[in-house]
Image (cartoon, rainbow, N blue to C red; front, top):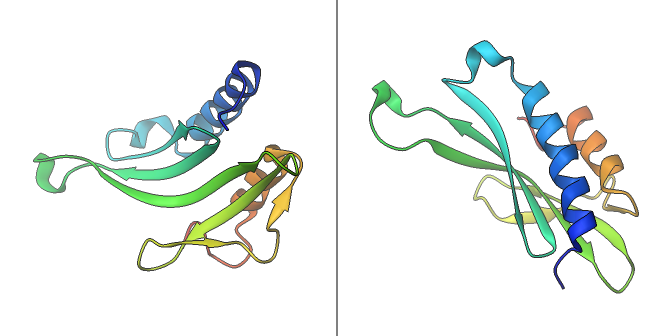
Length: 114
């Protein structure tokens, strides 16, 4: 089930603010943090400029937030070394996506930001 328009707008604001603050502006030509919303999921991505300025930017998975419509909670996932999504055991879900984004930022065990 897709997010409501209100939820989508709130998430866009939350993640746009987070991404803008994560990497200082002077490095945006080399490194950015971006997000994508697909259906009931939000993806957080680390993007790096092409090697030697040629080619496409690389996009690495950082975190996945998935809304469970039955429980009205958000689930948090991290990407393992093979880019497979795994549920994040220390803080697997919460009713508010902001709390899960805070957990990604804390990154106590290095699962999200290496």
